[in-house]
Structures are given as structure tokens and as C-alpha cells.
Length: 245
Ligand SMILES: [Fe+2]
Ligand SMILES: [Fe+2]
Image 1 (cartoon, rainbow, N blue to C red):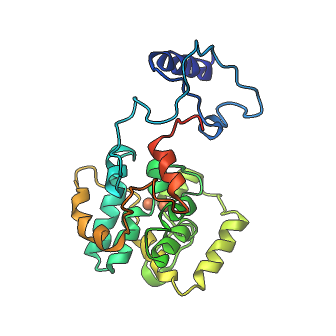
Image 2 (cartoon, helix red, strand yellow):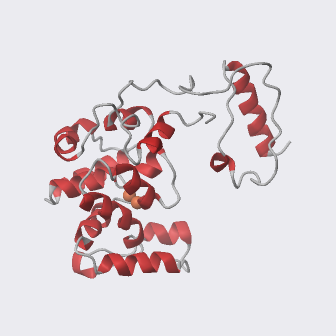
């Protein structure tokens, strides 16, 4: 048995314990398996397919807030919390503090690749346009130094991507566009406060940012995911990642 086959067998065993059959989205497994290959499914034995809450996950409130997503669906968020605290300490405006708190939420809870774009898209209906813009472009700006604010190419990137990694043309193009934009510094300040090594001993609580979020994040009354905004479906997918449709 290959590692993948073992993982699939374990998944199947787990799925057998559930009332509903769970079928993973292609993007959850693409790479681990060749997405062009047909999926052979074990018999469902007459069970219904997953169409809502997955009992392996903590139940979200009916009208989930941003903080509920942090608590129940995101991975550890020390990086975001410590970056936001640093931004606050550095005396940047509240909008930049909010941007720092949310800049990597796609990594925390959705899709890692192209995380700046996914994060911005998730947030766009609920934050100032400038905040979403800054978050979108921090991804490209991270690769380019700006001595005027003391920002260097991250040492960590040398370790992660190798010393000869060169950002692809579309990233260079995004950088050039952002460099000349009126909101450049908003995005740049995210990179300046973006801690790439956080202190495991420093504990920052989400509640520290209740007021900033309250003032600058337009929490929909129906709950994130149920408000018909252009990104509501993305929040629903984070809430119910294993729905069949
Ligand atoms: Fe990032
Ligand atoms: Fe970050």
C-alpha cells in the first residue's frame, strides 16, 4: 500500500463511522493523486451524502462571526495575532492593524497557494477597499525589499524556496503595479509587520482586537457565509468543507 492508499483507507474507515458519505473536493487531493484518474468509491451502502455540518469538526454558530472562524475553523493564528500586535506597537493606523490581523487568513483556513489574493477576496465585501488591496498585494511585495522602510528579502524565504528562487513574471508584474499605486505603503506596512518567526512564548488573545474589528469589519447580520455577498460562498465552504455540492 502506498502512503496515499493508506490515507484513503483511513479516510474510508473514518467515513464509515459517519452517517453521511464524505467525498473530497479535487483540490484537497490534487497532486497527492492525479486528478485525471477516475475516483473509485467504496459502496455507500445506501447512506446519504454529506450536505452540511461535518461532525468531525466543531459546530459553528448559525450566524458565524469573523472570530468564530478564527476559533472553530482556522489553524493556529499566533502569526496573525503577533503581527497585528506589532503593527499596533509600531503606531500604524487601525486599518493597517486590521490588515495585519487578517493578511494570511487564506493560509489559516482556506487555500495557501496565492494566499494574498484569496485572503483579499474573502474579505473584500466586509473591509475598506484599501485594506483588501493591501492584503492582496502583500503577497508580491514580500519578495521585494524596500530600504526606505527597512524591509529586506526574508531570510526565511531563502531557506524555504532556495537562494536561486526568482519570482515569476506575474509576481514581478504585480509588484511593479503595486509599487506605483497610491496605496503602496498600506500593503508595504503589512510586510514590515509580517513576522516570519513568531515567539511561541508570547500569547496574544483575539479579544485584544475586538474594538479594531468592531470598527473596521462589517460583520453581516446573517452571519459570514449566509449574507449573499460576493464571497459568502467561500466562507460557507470553510464552514462546510466536505459538502457534496
Ligand atoms: Fe502572507
Ligand atoms: Fe504573514
